[in-house]
Length: 168
Image (cartoon, rainbow, N blue to C red; front, side, top):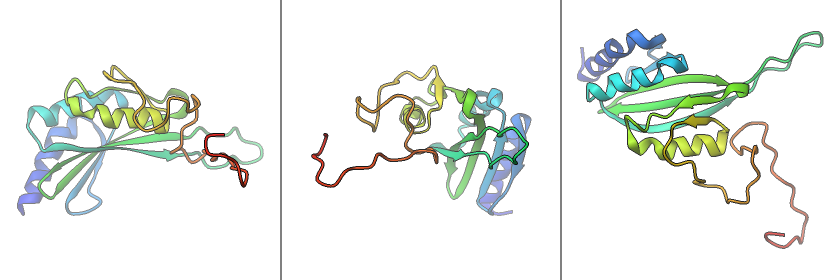
């Protein structure tokens, strides 16, 4: 077993109690699918074991497929990936939340630097992060309209009229 495989096996052993499922999409990666209720416990397990570092927090918009004529439209989801790295090994904690209840707990009590990624999730995807220490805008202007999330697939940029003045 290579050093990277041993590192991933260690992470798998740490995270198994919290996982819905685990997959190895590549030899250097482990994807751990979690319910939101298990997110903090999974992050704490990695932090307590000093397993790597938080590399990134990423949002993925997963709109529901179009409903058949006689069916109710299913609801879309936001999938959030918390990626941790240790050498060449990457572990992604993956949590899906529905649009109607896009709420996750903050991991900032465990990893204070996560605030930037959490702010981006709130601002760009509309995920409410409960308990995050800073909810101020990170990227968008303060004048940006509430409830408009530019990284959701449903986002339609405003059309600018030719010759329109900047900011007008």
